[in-house]
Image 1 (cartoon, helix red, strand yellow):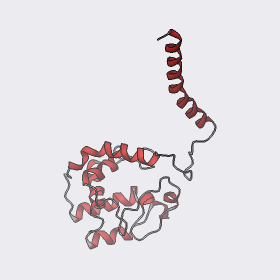
Image 2 (image 1 turned 120 degrees about the vertical axis):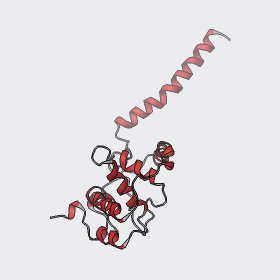
Image 3 (image 1 turned 180 degrees about the vertical axis):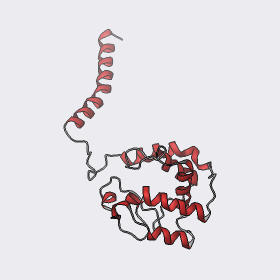
Image 4 (image 1 turned 45 degrees about the vertical axis):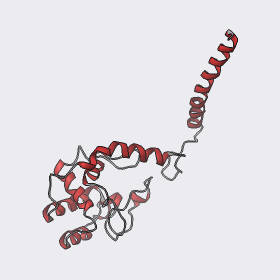
Length: 181
């Protein structure tokens, strides 16, 4: 092969590698990237985020709670939920808060009739509470809640479809922080 052909191939490969980066840069600086919460997701954005989240939580499915799902712990989980989670995820039979309505993606409602996270292993729920999920608005509570509190709220959410009467009553009687006078 002649040197001219090899040089042309190398230039072609270099341009082939640079063009996507240049196009991406131009896309960003031209304002094409949707950054507002009401903006549409990018192609494959949800798929990539879902795949990355599943991979990060893969080993958490076998994790078991060191805290029992008794009424005392579920009631403690209610307190944690009302203080830290209800503002975004809502309470049973309640309409979404203004905060929840402004988030992108929309936070899931975690109580019946919605499925919530009752079909997730408790270790996965705990991982979400502890670490949060990047680019969703879901914060991690590793620095603000104790391990026990994170397990208590995880157990509350795992059992959201079969809570004891007193726990349901306390949960439904609660208020989100924006509703407190």
